[in-house]
Image 1 (cartoon, one colour):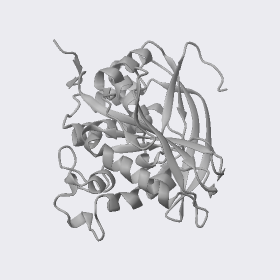
Image 2 (tube, one colour):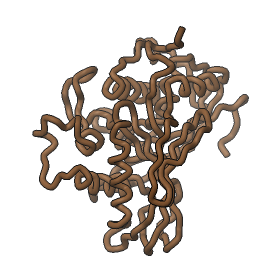
Image 3 (tube, helix red, strand yellow):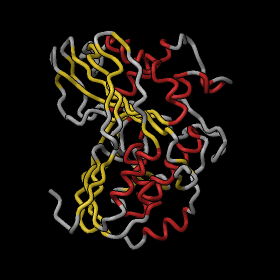
Length: 326
């Protein structure tokens, strides 16, 4: 008998975690927060890999068969939400966390991309676009630097398994995917603790009624995490998690902020400054298995605006007793 939770079978493959290690060939200058640059650069090359010269994804009837259309211009299939643009994309970029801006020849940079559900079929197209991007280079304005992809690895952060899928110009096959059961092994670690830290590794942008929310209470975090959890599973895994969001949010109301350290960050998107926040929250209170599942998934998938650019990436750390933020 197979295990399941929220109507999702433990054996379901939900994601593939791909790590890219690049070595610069030229001098390059990158912004402090590199997610927007990397995602935009990859998105500029992928259409060429797909053989597209002139295209209009809005009018395309087979966008879901195209790597660029599906990954970068996804729209709702109408499974949960009406058919709108702006649906959660089937991938997230996990950008380099270094704030270094200057890179010289032979310097190494690492970033990752997580593909969800049926987007795994476009993995090789994504890899080819990054290999091609190496010839074009990355960087700000006229300070782009070319690079070589030295190695590509797929890993499972829950089991510790890693496999090489590219090295020295050779591609390899690997079945190192993330299953729902792997995710649930992480969930079990969280439900035994009543004090935990949510540490945002990259800036988040949560917007409600056209206002950016600076301080996130636990209910707000769970609400926005739940939206991504449900949308990504429904859209890309064709499975709607079975839970009552109203009851879930009721349970979050008793979870309190014990400590916090949050700072404002301004990041430009297409030349326009946007308001983001980054920091740590210490929460106290008991979370049940459903809440822990939602938060564990968005630990992988991020929350908030521009999540696919790498924003809203956080880690959960459990602690036995309340402690000051280090």
